[in-house]
Length: 345
Image 1: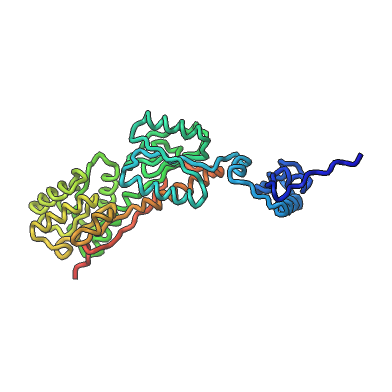
Image 2: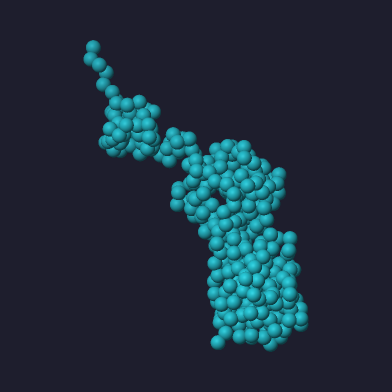
């Protein structure tokens, strides 16, 4: 009796990995390794498998490739503040990077609730995600999710309290330096700093950078101290009135946020001080709706949050491939110059 011939896929049937293995005369496992670039396959065997796949027009779908590699091609984004003006740019950057990598993204908002966060975490893990990015609503350190999770985790904007975790943050100390260096370069020597809630690490870090830069330049801080308050235009107006009453010779003000800066501009205008002729003003956050519509337009520090999000996604991709990291990685901010700090003539 003649040997039964092996079935050959026809145009009406899509070729499978089994068909490729049969044509290349290798096992299914070897065919899989060859097509996924594994090192355990000889070069001649890999070439034979690839030739068979091309002849059969074999194209494994994304899910099959992922399962063969032990992955699902999906990641989780866990945020504490989906409505936050700072967390959203980070999320946009991460999603852009994941989209470029053809990853599916599951987005969950814990709303700052630890119980809700744990619920979302378990839900994401049940979907067999390959990795997770945790985005905070402010720059203060947050509790770690722990090192016993089955997937790698990267923290963005708000660092983990654990040095064993990998966290990406904005360099707020460097940003404070950047703002004051710019004002000094504009010829200002009597520089004040009006900022927000002292309980925020970001406020303390920006103030530390500003103080250090003034000290290195041999300049005192106008007003004698950092003026801490709230992140509001009202505080910016009130603090500026106090500053002008006590230190009328002030010629520059570095503000901890664009909202504060808008209040500062209002108060300077009320007191007949020209900006930037008499007093230069720098804001923080580069919130376009405030900075670009201020009169004059406001020079501001941009935290590059979308870039931070993209880098966080890149670090997660690396961790998924086994290249794990730890500690805190600071991302530089940038200054966006506008009319409020034109150099004195």
